[in-house]
Amino acid sequence: MTDFAIKVEELSKRYRIGAKKRRDKSFASAAANALSYPLHNLQRLRELTSFGEHRQNGRAASDIIWALKDVSFEVKQGEALGVIGRNGSGKSTLLKVLSRITEPTEGRVLVRGSVASLLEVGTGFHPELTGRDNVYLNGAILGMTKRDIDRRFDEIVAFSGVEQFIDTPVKRYSSGMKVRLAFAVAAHVEPDILIIDEVLAVGDAEFQEKCLGKMESVTGEGRTVVFVSHDLDAVQRFCSRVLLLADGAVACDDAPSKAVAKYMETSQAMRRYSRYDADGNSTPSEEGIQVVRARVTSGGEFRPEGVPSGSPLEFEVTCLVPKQIQLPDFAIGIDTLTGHRVARFFSGTGNLNGAAGRVGPGEFTYRCVVPDLKLVPDDYLVTLNAMRHGASLAKVEHALTIKVLDRQFSKRAGVRDGVVRADETWEIPGGLPVLARQGQRD
Image 1 (tube, rainbow, N blue to C red):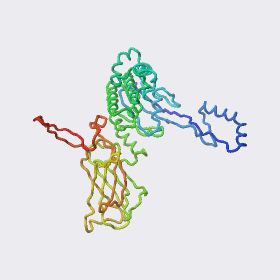
Image 2 (cartoon, rainbow, N blue to C red):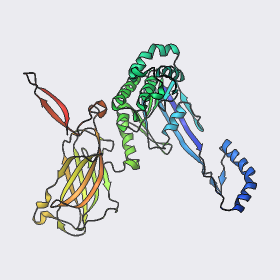
Image 3 (cartoon, one colour):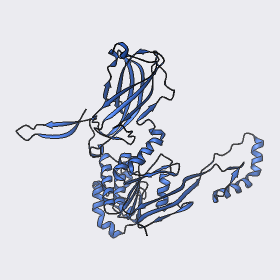
Image 4 (cartoon, rainbow, N blue to C red):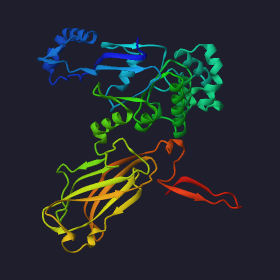
């Protein structure tokens, strides 16, 4: 006997999707179709009640899709498994099967112990009932007895932070208040297996940190957690193993850093993390300069999953010219997602004279090394710009994206202002001791 909590064996799930209704283009066509409607409706009824291999013109029916296909894995008792992937990859379908909300088409799922699921925050809440009544209702749905809820009621309400409104109908709650109360109930059910889908996508930063702390305590007590999220930082912080789904199949089952790196490499949405390739789409400037490739590494390695704040960064940018020209200056700008410029690096090479100051024809490469860039954890955009006398010759806006991480200096931990970290020293008036700490500055 193994110590698994969940065992999935060759799991597949298919659905039938709706098809666009055909419109008649003439009265004669409408009359002919009216005569055939009884036979047509009978055929549609067979298709709705059976997943037989219906074929049209030798091809499989187009209204059948496989949300999951041959998925197999195990989750050990006390393990925190993360599940990531693009929208439509099968994550939510997998959790519904694990929660026994829907039956698999093929394969089987073995579950040991009680299961509590939080797939949609607020599911089971009745808008006309008060928060107090909904705690008892939702707790009962999740498997708690009235005695269990009585014993933990004060703890649930304190965790949610809605004490003042606990006797107010839920229909008057804000979405954030509903989130707090629903997660508080689910987190205090004390199941053997807790299944959570995207709870961190809602709620404020403080409550998100509170949720992560609660889930960490759950695994610390030896219980199992399956956690789906698009917050890759939270997944890497919390999970001991990550499953990457792509098109309903397992693309990677590995350590969090490796699974996230694989996701970054394969995701269209993240394809510009760490590297840029013009693919022949950029237009050369009047002087013929073209930025054709660029990449950013840390310690000589690609880090698409993110780099800790203060890590060294190496930028390599390759340009192409059809003839020999005077070497231009090159600038690298780092912006926040809102467009605020936080750092700029300038080569100052345009003043070089003689043979050393000329390049081409062909490719030439700039390399810029930043040994210690202390940025607050976030996503940053990198702009590349070849210049002469302050004028742009070849510019690529937001060619690269850098993800900065630091688990001990997180925005969820309450740091919201500023973008650059610095080592600060404070002297307090009145002869008090000198204090030194790490802070942040604009």
